[in-house]
Length: 354
Ligand code: NAD
Ligand code: DAU
Image 1 (cartoon, rainbow, N blue to C red):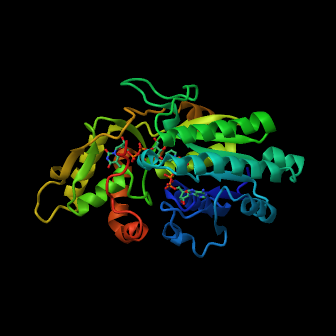
Image 2 (image 1 turned 30 degrees about the horizontal axis):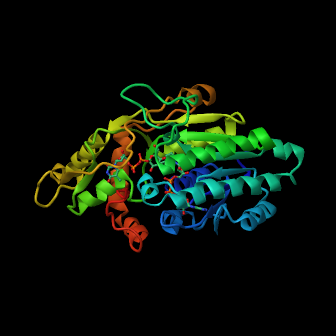
């Protein structure tokens, strides 16, 4: 795919989508950013695109077929990159229906609008078109103490969030096999970095610590996640878009497996170094073990050898440098945190309803 082309990115006012918008603009793409601005989507994330005429923001839902189809008519995009989703496991425990609505029903609608509209493209443009669906390693379920998720690992989603993403992956795949839509799927591990909404572990711990509040660790803190710096995920998605083989799925991971308690203690140690508490007490004293997440997956770990060997992607950031950068970003952007949470989120525990 040539870099002068126009793309539609959905969910580009969220965490990864927002970072991806900057990544594309730095790489000379023109982007139509379609986002519904839910509790997780914020124009404050896009302030640095303000004077960039290659970024056009459109407020709306991926399930609004008239709107999506009008964007095809106006811009003839060369690809759609679909980030738009409900993304938080804890919220899916409290209210699965919204996850089915956006991640399944509206993703189907986006596929349908795309299928309908690219029929008007020339046959070459139809072949060159890409529908890239951004998905998660959670579709594979949970690992024990050993092993890695490969692209061949059977799907076994355990939360309503994971089940909704698994369902959308299957729909995307079916649109290639049934209708010939040129699709790609990426399944990525846990991201961290700038602009992550503070309901997720890393920003929540940073902000609670700065306010001297308890640092909630679910269960025994020994669940493992495989952490990837968000810019590396963005580079992986662009690599798949430009070089991926149609119909293939690619796992993406950082190869940095950490227990949750290690993550929380690392943040505490870095904060002791760069922003010690006035009392001089170590931040670790704020750690509080709380009830476990229902159905909590024990361990995720990704085998990224397919994207590395076939497409030449490798992550640039180490966990040590990435977590320092992330912490500094939050320290420098407390106003962003205040603006995006002010009306709709107070960092209280989510996802305990059974
Ligand atoms: P996020 O919650 O930060 O952002 C989601 C964005 O989608 C928001 O801007 C929201 O306004 C928008 N949105 C929600 N419903 C919409 C709809 N119906 N129409 C249009 N826009 C809508 O999510 P994120 O963490 O940036 O994740 C983005 C994607 O990447 C998701 O599909 C998620 O499943 C996937 N993913 C996330 C991670 C991670 O660690 N965060 C890892 C792997 C994959
Ligand atoms: O693996 C990819 C997935 O990573 C993405 O698909 C999801 O969209 C993304 O939200 C993330 O899911 P997790 O559930 O792993 O992320 P979260 O930040 O919610 O939790 C990370 C781990 O930390 C998890 O084991 C639960 C635990 N946790 C989380 C919170 C919010 C705590 O111990 N305390 C907390 O307060």
